[in-house]
Image (cartoon, rainbow, N blue to C red):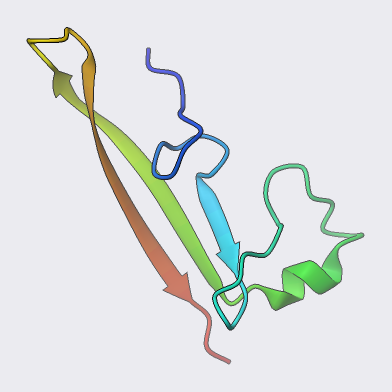
Length: 77
């Protein structure tokens, strides 16, 4: 089993990122209480998902090779 990472594209705490209409980060990560942070939630215009896939074992280092990918979705209303 591979533990989740914590850097960009490593599917840990940053699995989802949220941005306002100007591309500024919105603090709406894990543990946010949406009932008490409605203003922050209303600012979200873009959601980005960051994934890290373990593709194969590196024969030289015997470590795992990761492939990172991300996708975004923008809300236009």
